[in-house]
Image (cartoon, helix red, strand yellow):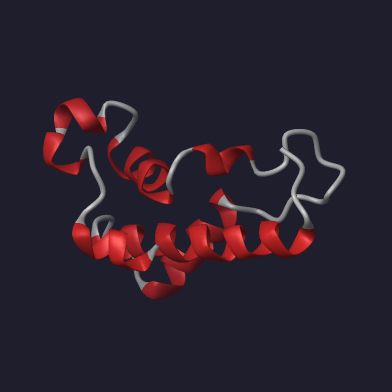
Length: 91
């Protein structure tokens, strides 16, 4: 996918916000820790970066749950397999 800069930045900001929310509400991080974790998970990628924005193929919910519980979170915590209503309200 080719991103125009405005769309890429909008998506980046949105995913960072959602990731930080999950890390605060489910991972127990402070707001500052959650913000730092979101920046690490979703770094800015220059336009010429191959596969720029590939991380967006899954919701921030997924990547945060992987960070908190590991890749088997859906099997080990089936109640977390789908995003909560509170998370969905952020999107």
